[in-house]
Image 1 (tube, rainbow, N blue to C red):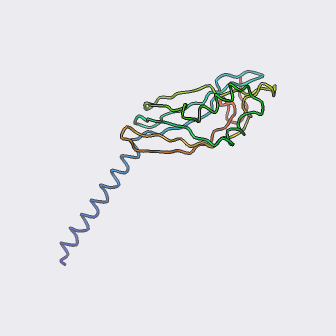
Image 2: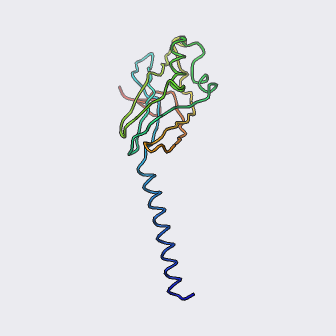
Image 3: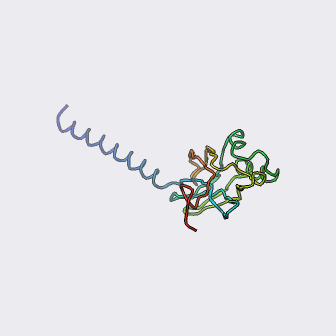
Length: 165
């Protein structure tokens, strides 16, 4: 084979590689990215109420968003004696009933997610408990994505537990 043929063959391989990586980069940067966190709804000197927030921080809409967690791990998050209704509300966030059909880029949805209190009988959640979750979702072209996130029950108004009021 002549040198010109080798050069043409190498140029073709380089072009094909560049096309592949360009398409891959485009798909990675132009997709939905779903995250979640437990955030303080309101807090005072005796109790903190929480919401579970789900965000689309990507550049495309996400559909069929579901949060998944193991029941035994949710039970560790929930206090030992919450009211039955509150217990069911927390579990519902991780069930089929918690399906989020569509979430546009830059948008969020939230759901009430319990409370902590200095009075143990009023606790719905255990303060500083963690919950590993999996988030599954699709884009509008039906490509599937999953994310793994660790949720933590704490006052989100301060990352280390203190703030000026």
